[in-house]
Length: 305
Image (cartoon, rainbow, N blue to C red; front, top):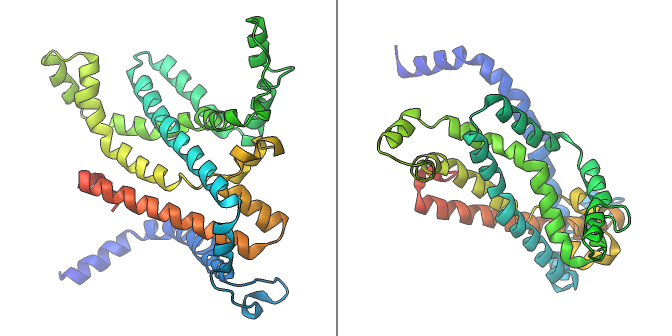
């Protein structure tokens, strides 16, 4: 049988998989690739009444407006700082959680702990933000009640700019660490048990097993997840920020995505908002390409491509 006939037979045998792939392809085409055509209005003075075809071209005017505005430095600083906070504290949190769960010997306790840490992922961020605001309230919040018991002054956390980055990062860690830990638990389960047996026979302690067996076994997963995380440094969900934001702390809470929301949807300045969004996407693309290139240079099998 020729090679072409073998390929054709293989494709026919996998027709169920190809059929299952169709909804996924349609999703990406309809909701990811087709909307990309809309970025063209970043280079036009777009009017909904004239449409894309009738709106005049303005080149990079809206990009120049954004780069020269008083908001550029502030929103870029806030976006990068929140992203770096998330990378520094939010990225290792699920790895540490997965290692701790993996070390629990009692299966019932392990499942119960994993379920408890996983539940916040399925709770709406509106509910999570509401609980956080109540807990941080200066009059009825648990944290301030505890501080007053210790003889300390009450703090209005959501009225002081210096607390916003920490509060936002903490909520993301509490909400998403349990869900993200599943990936690392799957990677840990793929490590060959005979490696641990060999390490124990050589007299390796648990920290030494962690250092020489466990961590090297999940390094490729960590690198890939790190590359994906780096690409999202600048892409902060505007809903999550808006739920915690108020006018008093705008100097540290205003990020690119909330600026796009205010200019695009609230003020109907579609071209300016699209230009800012396009800038955000470009920076995210550069970050992903750079981190992938570094990962490929350090360890080629750990890079995305």
